[in-house]
Amino acid sequence: MTLEIILFILFALIGAASGVLMITRKNPVMSALFLILNFAALAGIYLLLNAQFIAVVQIIVYAGAIMVLFLFVIMLLRPDAEISILRTNPLLKYVAIGVGVLVFAQLIYLIFFFKPLNITPSDVAERIQIGTVENIGTEIYTKYIIPVQVAGFLLLSATIGALVLAKKKFE
Amino acid sequence: MIPVEYYLVLSAFMFTTGVIGVLIRRNAIVLFMSIELMLNSANLTFVTFASFLGDSAGQVFIFFVMTVAAAEAAVGLAIMIALFRNKQTLNADEVNVLKW
Image (cartoon, rainbow over all chains, first blue to last red; front, side, top):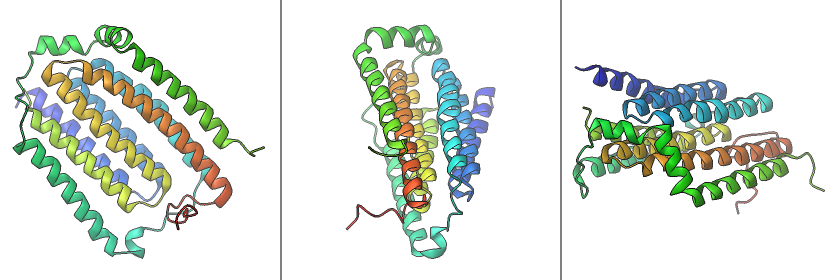
């Protein structure tokens, strides 16, 4: 077992376990903290895939900015304890498990039995090259400049929309 | 060298977790977090293929997925605040004014 495999198993286990814990915790604050752990584990996996820039952005933007917003709103609103839907409607548990198994089976089928693409793995030097800040920045500001502008407008309109929605009274 | 399937199976598992989370939870904020989990599993697939195919388009796309996730979180949480102010609840089952 190489170090790569050990690290992958470690991060994958943390990621999968924190995802499951996130949807099963009753306290939304605990859910948010487990989601942050999940994002951190994903950042580790991105590093294994030689995507340095994405790994750092994952920590800064997702685990930092977005989840702080979530935690802030949870603590601001302090909603009353959630009544588990599994207790009020036990049938739904089987529906949820059934749908989950169905979705998972479909994805597994796609991964293992449906291969229109012949993936020839790129060599490591090339992989390290495409994940650098320099390369991603060049791509974003040359080839993808219009989508970046559109993303900027989207963020602006989202900011205005959030302000309008969270305002105290509509005049 | 880890085969591509390992990453894809992890991504599939996380996506399924998100789907089940949306189905079994009733707290609207936790529903949002489950959606974030699904977005992230899609991101993992993007990075995996970007890395294995040697194409940076997948990594650039994550940049845009993150932008959309941030916009979604901002607007969604503003809706939660407006909702809590009007109905004093975040239970997704009690918010049924638009249903008929």
